Amino acid sequence: MALVLTAISVVAGGALAYVNKVTEGPIAEINAKNLQEGIKKVILGNQGGDLQVGEPVEADGYTLYKTDRGTAVKAVTNGFGGPLEVLVGFDEAGNILGYTILATVETPGLGVKADTWFQKGGKGDIIGKNPGQKELLVTKDGGDIDAITASTITSRAFLNAVNQAYKAFMGNSGDAMTGASTQAGKSNQ
Image (cartoon, rainbow, N blue to C red; front, side):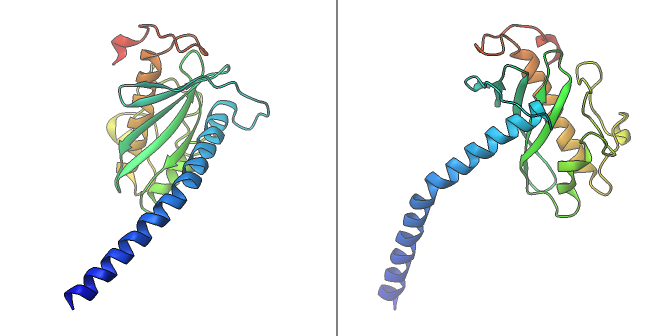
């Protein structure tokens, strides 16, 4: 009996390892494509056109993608259900151009609304705001952003990710394409 169970476990483990190896490349390609589309979305919004994206810059757990029209920053924070990965676009002045949720495990029907809730025209609209002028907070915390109904923890986590992305942007806001950084905004951290 132990020999049969061991054989089944070895075969199943081998099959899983094989499937993982085979799907690893396509999954990485899909993630890279989604990231490129996300960068375009958060910088250009609904405008057409192409972007020149420089090499990613890793800084303090954040990834910055400097383009010829702004900077996209990937930030990860913990939401209600687990990690919440957000990509936020900023113009040179630090105003939010757009955002997209890259990964979430928030509650279906509630926390996943962050994908649209904070967009232009949404109830918690953050587009065009500058977190350096006023930190983005939900109204329950003294801010002026409406939280997602019945999902305050996710709203706080999302806004925290945006605020942290802004700080990473300001700490690394150099020439848009070379990746050269300045010290501007370091006092905001």
